[in-house]
Image (tube, rainbow, N blue to C red; front, side, top):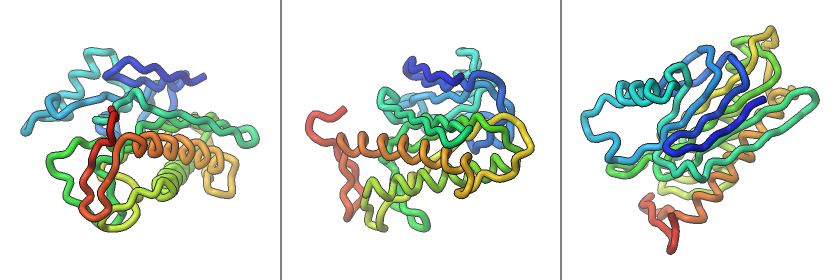
Length: 228
């Protein structure tokens, strides 16, 4: 059984046991075995220019007993994290997401995002069906596709076109080790992963848009009246 605990500046996704995890997270990227995926909320003051961010995060993780966790960094207010589950057949996928769009981008193009907070999209997905490494790679591709579909449907217009994500997105996917090599769109696993990620990401994007606006001509971010 997985659980999610918010204790700012930390958000902890307890996987309910040791699982194989695949990600490009700042702490423990690649194929690893972990029991938790964690987020660390930061502000500009936490990360002055020239700081070794990886070393700083390592110290933070060790001080909290999270050194063995896969870990994300985000400036998104984690009080607005979202989570969704989807059960298809015998497979349940649980997605936890923090969605900020302050450095939104359209794939294949870039907007100048200097001197802005990086809200980013960080997603963690737990699948209860066992997968091989090949299957986990395919499941990660489905999660990425679902993220992109959700952001497109959120309708965030940039000078370069509709946003497809942000410049610092990160996704981690966890599953028990097994022999199943396939987790594509025709499979129960792929459908469950896609549904949970799509819904969690779209909900987070809609929440962000209720407080912030992006100028479609310049890409500038502004807060709406009374927003956090």
